Length: 93
Length: 83
Image 1 (cartoon, rainbow over the protein chains, first blue to last red):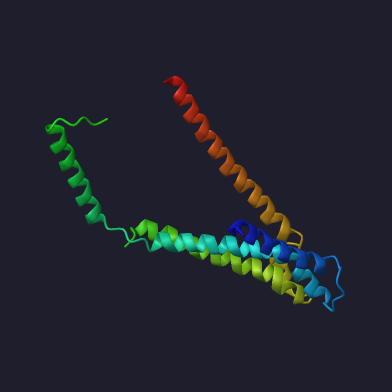
Image 2: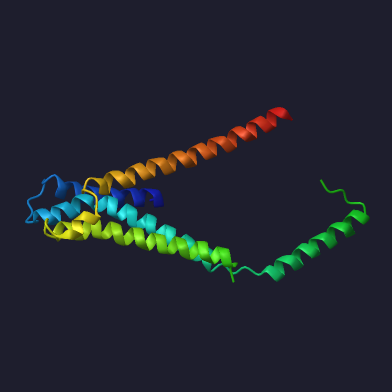
């Protein structure tokens, strides 16, 4: 079974359970306050995932291992190689 | 080490996501259990907005991404025609 199918099955199962609880297809003893929470649950999970994604991206941007010296050195080496090869007759676009 | 401005932007995004998560959690999960005459309720919009607002924001975000994508594709086509 492909990953996509697994995910769709999982999501379908969760949505099915949610629908049963929200539309009273199954007898439950939930208080009206808990019913309110259940009703908003899918949107809450979506929002949590969005916040988690934003936080992860932001954190990775903030802790990126940027070595400016190595970058400059690399640029110089590239220039050197270009000049060397151009001398030997290689054409650059 | 990421450059200073990168660090600021990154940590800003982390802080923003924490704020949004906390506000939304209180709005959807905590408020139903709080008495209707508690002053906390005045800091939050009526409950249906907890579903409407993210949906509208999502639609706007997807449209923005879609238009940007379409714009870039059009630019590419125009360039190819000019050649």
